[in-house]
Image (tube, rainbow, N blue to C red; front, side, top):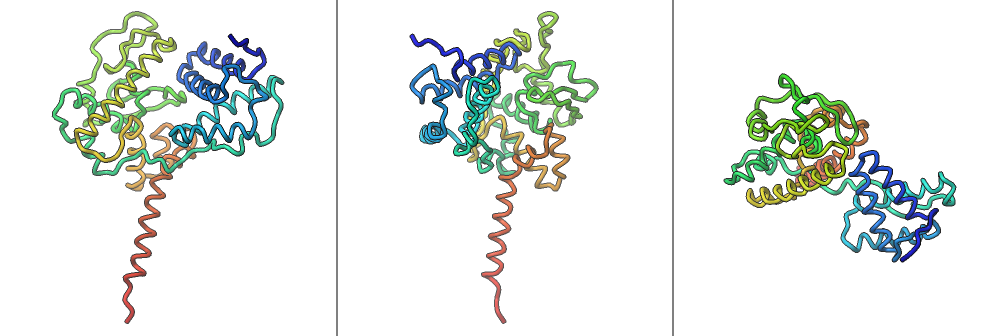
Amino acid sequence: MQMMNKNGFSRCAEFYIGRLRKEGRHSTAHVYKNALFSFSKFCGTSNVSFRQITRERLRRYGQYLYECGLKPNTISTYMRMLRSIYNRGVDMHQAPYVHGLFRDVFTGVDTRQKKAIPIGELHMLLNKDPQSEKLRRTQAIANLLFQFCGMPFSDLAHLEKSNLERGLLKYNRTKTGTPMSIEVLESAQNAIGGLYNKSDARSSGYPDYLFRILSGAYKRNEEGAYREYQSALRRFNNELKSLSRKLRLHSPVTSYTLRHSWATTAKYRGVPIEMISESLGHKSIKTTQIYLKGFELEERTKVNKLNYSYVCSFKMF
């Protein structure tokens, strides 16, 4: 059994992951754990040292991830996790500062990965009867995600009954803590009624969830709560795939499709980007611009084609 270097890269990562778990940030800890496991596997050791983090090894690791079929944004996430751990080592004087260490690997956002779906398919996803009670429930959740201004599944699942009062939803985003207020549309009432959690909270300190998505058996910061949420998210995404197949949609659909589609639809209708950003609960308008970049590229391509077609079809007199 290998002894863990107390000042090594792996030890630094494990220490930080443990701290994240103590703070109840289980989702972030899970991503760091995945990145560390993947990189350790690539290096052939569970005890990676800071000396092994070189520009060339990182470049080869990025190529390895690409050949494994990972998407650019997933590769970027892993690289940013590794960079964060390395920088912690530098701050604690355990690792040398190396200028441009991560400059040869992708750490940005690939906006070419389309997440919104065409308006016709969106209409079918939200409105066409799937002829199945199980899929109707999935469709009801999808409707609420869209009608609650593109709300993330995480926020919907964690809403509590106290967040809804007199037709107004007031809550803090689970990811950023940003305060949000949404007036509930009349068209959402049936979906709310069908998903409403009629059970009471177990006892003080336990969540009293608004919808029948999570059980409320765990306190919010417990690891069990994180595991239950991950299971619910996987189940919902699988049910969305089933719903998509049943409705014969061609575009891939995930929980985030509704959020991106809401933003894209608003942009298409001429809603100012500032209003879209505020409705999504983004702290920075730059995040909203990333959401809409794929849409803007598509629109520019249409304009470009129309321009060329106009010139080609012009008749000389």
